[in-house]
Image (cartoon, rainbow, N blue to C red; front, side):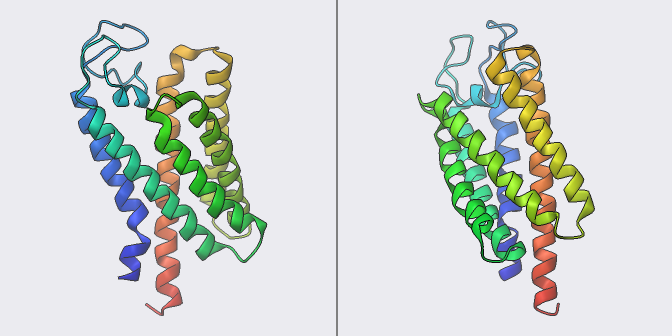
Length: 207
């Protein structure tokens, strides 16, 4: 049962992906490239478009409830992951608290991005999220998880590129695609670490 509980973040991420794809299929349409288009454009639509009451083409958006549910499940799963990671990989200290507390606050902020406070919640979540990822990478660098050290740095770089484009407005036309690549990379990294936690749990119990 403890092994199953450890893997709850991965289960949540898989459910999120399924709901994301389902919501995308329901999206009424409109993107930053063509506001009159129909359906979800994977190259030009943002994830946040799925949570709006109306598509960018002005039509009612039936994807909204499923997209919001997916967001809640994802943020809950990641908050649980941050708590578990600090428990399995870190001793007592400031960075353990940073990962647990700021990780949870980051996910609370992320849940609220579908509200009218989207921009400020995105900024808060991004700042806290970067600090959490830095804390996780710092912990990993004390281990022999070389692949996760390298991929963690790639995640940091991609997150930096996302924020640079978002706040500068330069190359904004490429941001929806870069956002999805970053999202996918970070989630794969987290799932990999979650599986490592399961293995660590099994070793601790002599399995």
